[in-house]
Length: 186
Image (cartoon, rainbow, N blue to C red; front, side):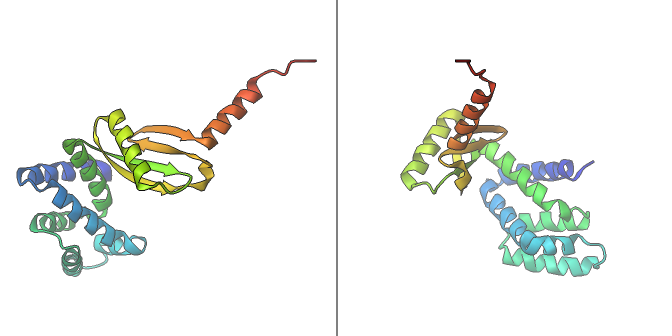
């Protein structure tokens, strides 16, 4: 059984407990902060916490300090200690990703990654969010990045779908059409 499958099982169980306590978003924040700390500096901390070369007590003491720094609540602390005890802490990034996806689905949210040629104004960002809300029927959380190679327009990734309205894509389509069109002789 792969790390992803195990991570999804942990995430599903944790989501169930979080929902019972009406703390899904709070625990998602905890997990994201914990993962961010664990993955800092090329994931050295996560590697150390998952490495059996270090004694379990040493790893537990480090984990306690990391959880304090992450300001994690008791449920999150308990999950992290359980994962440490079961040798599953290396699956933390996959667990966070799975928990985020499940929490978003439960709350009717869609995370959309939007690439633009230049930074969006707040008005344009609101317009993009509203348009994507109409397309998805969900509350949209935008993750915007700038990619000058697009020349103009934007590319939006919603789950597994890609909406490419970039100038680069239009130019590539035009190029392909020109290459396929036979040249008429004069």
